[in-house]
Length: 223
Ligand SMILES: Cc1ncc(COP(=O)(O)OP(=O)(O)O)c(N)n1
Ligand SMILES: Cc1nc(C(=O)O)sc1CCOP(=O)(O)O
Ligand SMILES: [Mg+2]
Image 1 (cartoon, rainbow, N blue to C red):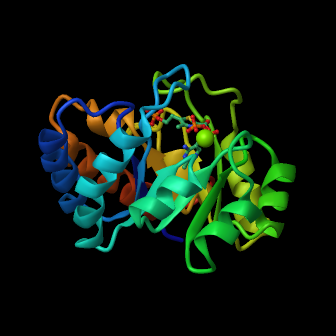
Image 2 (cartoon, helix red, strand yellow):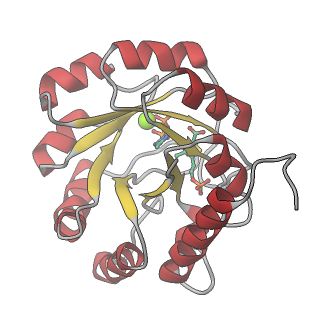
């Protein structure tokens, strides 16, 4: 059982040079498996394509240098233009099969499945590399349409071998239940970029919380 961090960028990046330094610090602070470039307001308004491509050009090499996968949100076409490792698509975005056709067999494709085993099964059949469930906790980053229960992760990890990502309002304080349930990745945005001690400190806190959760004895065993 191992659970790794998946960073989602802040909704907007005002100063790319400054954010690149924060991004590097976050990646260097711990084991970050994946980073997703997601430039999108809470109401779903995306940044212009040029802004996304400019951010990808600055951030992708930093991720590559650390063997962190770099995905673009929503847009397989921009992922291809940017030379990213893959794309994350939601139910209203490009279909997983179309993203695969455009990006090829080696691309990483993740699919939002909300709180639905059914959507996750379909994503698996369509060749997704991971499924994402959420939102597990209240979040200010997105108007999340569904609320997922950690029991869904537990069931998914027991019943399938396809990796799953948990997302939505995850913090170092509440992530333990998801790590214990068997989430392969914890996708986090606000709790890292808005941490008053900085993103590196937040990543270290997540790592410590994940380790503690995984080392804890199963519920019901004491002494
Ligand atoms: C890892 C991960 N999981 C879920 C989402 C949400 O995707 P989507 O439902 O398409 O919503 P937007 O992010 O596009 O607003 C995600 N981006 N990443
Ligand atoms: C992008 C996104 N998708 C969600 C979903 O439920 O599918 S919740 C969410 C926001 C994640 O940011 P934070 O870690 O700040 O809550
Ligand atoms: Mg989307």
